[in-house]
Image 1 (cartoon, rainbow, N blue to C red):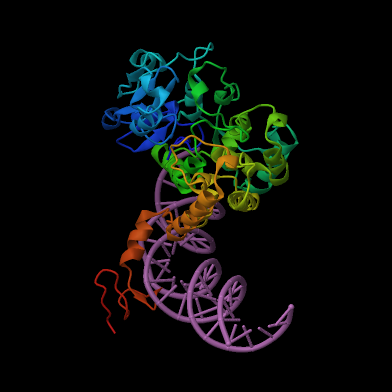
Image 2 (cartoon, protein in one colour):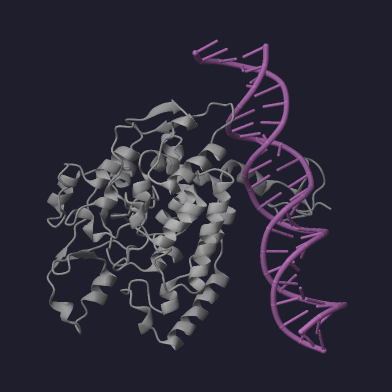
Length: 415
DNA sequence: CTCGCGGAACGAACCACACTGCCCT
DNA sequence: TGAGGGCAGTGTGGTTCGTTCCGCG
């Protein structure tokens, strides 16, 4: 949880919904909470800009950041000079307020950019299901993305893997005139300037890698996307959508790929489509130039992700909970843990980390990793329900009525 | 340093059957 | 063009089995 929107898994999260215990971007917040009368009553507030995982409750006027209680306490401790900072209570809201209404709720909440539509609202257009969705036949020859060579690879991968042979499968797409999400190109001073950008090379103030890796569960994203489809009945091959609608920019946070991290860029060129998604999910993948064992873990996960998708589909659903969750949690190697600091602590330079603390943190990380349980995502609850009650012999299902040695319901054995 | 052995760890396979999606009429 | 039937493929969990890895003598 934190930083990346729990719903779309793509955009930076901005608000926190206590009822859903979810971090959401503005567009998903509006989408989710406009679903029905009950969801409209969910109380939301800004997300803490320091830990990116807790609801903010105060706004520091001096630092211009929204903070949760913990981060506020940490940052404005009486022993520090920051204790005199002026802070403003952040009110929660419900319903589906516009950006303008939000800015009326929170005076510090700046209005959307000059285009009159915030990035998230632009994104809302991208994510909106009820409108502007047209179903078109997939024609790989139409795919003309050509931002750079890396993306050309993407196209090739799509051609190879995503074309349903002969079935003429349909897909949803965003109208071509729709501008690509520009969230990541937000000008300074916009609403999102306090949010870290997506570019992998960016250092995120107040954002620990722990937030990104340790607490971030790719499976969660997967599930959310799938729920998205279930909820709205729309087939949304998310990454494809982004790629084909210029969304690659949003994935990388820049239109100029040359500006991207060289490591990341190289990976993109070499690995094709998936890597962009990976980097969107794992913005800090190449950030840690401090690469050590942690970095190797990340690299592994990237390669795994890429390989899997290069041979199958770019779709999120290509990730099985069984494998991806584990792998991604594997990549949850937390530099913050390695640093032996809680995730809400501001990042510090590696050189400042005492080696003893580091080794101690490494040990703790290994312990945590050992005890971590990789949950399997169940795609069909009905099948699970049946399997849960099905009788077995030596673990294998048996025909109804046949003798069994294990009954999940009674924990009894018939023979 | 190499080899063999035992234990631990891990993943694949197996089973029945409801469900899904595609194809054909 | 839509509806309906047929059919092949998929996914679900507990257990077993085979393979790999690691430590020890």
